[in-house]
Length: 133
Image 1 (cartoon, rainbow, N blue to C red):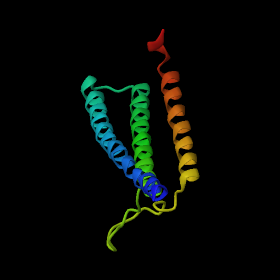
Image 2 (spheres, rainbow, N blue to C red; image 1 turned 180 degrees about the vertical axis):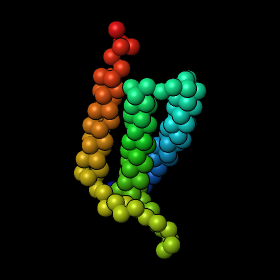
Image 3 (cartoon, rainbow, N blue to C red; image 1 turned 120 degrees about the horizontal axis):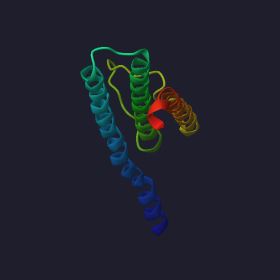
Image 4 (cartoon, rainbow, N blue to C red; image 1 turned 180 degrees about the horizontal axis):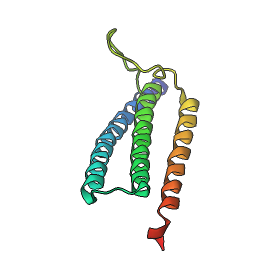
């Protein structure tokens, strides 16, 4: 009886992860605000854009999109792998990767995204070396 109770507590404790995945979804809202703020900041600072400024702006947008994609992937795949399957109606679109990314695949995707994000950050630093002196 005690063993069964412990197993049930452990099994249902996976639902404690659900608020964490919801928090990642709220992180998407924060990234969306940052994305829009970058647009307004870029277009409000000056009327003439140098190629360096434009490149840095585009790299910043790519960086935000990669982070948002990473959040989405971790939230959906993590929820499906550790909490519960997401049930869809017949007419709803479902990305091909959903339901197929296991924990090992998720780790590889996260590592790949982190490498891409880090590369973009390094490129931004390289292009913006004048402001670090």
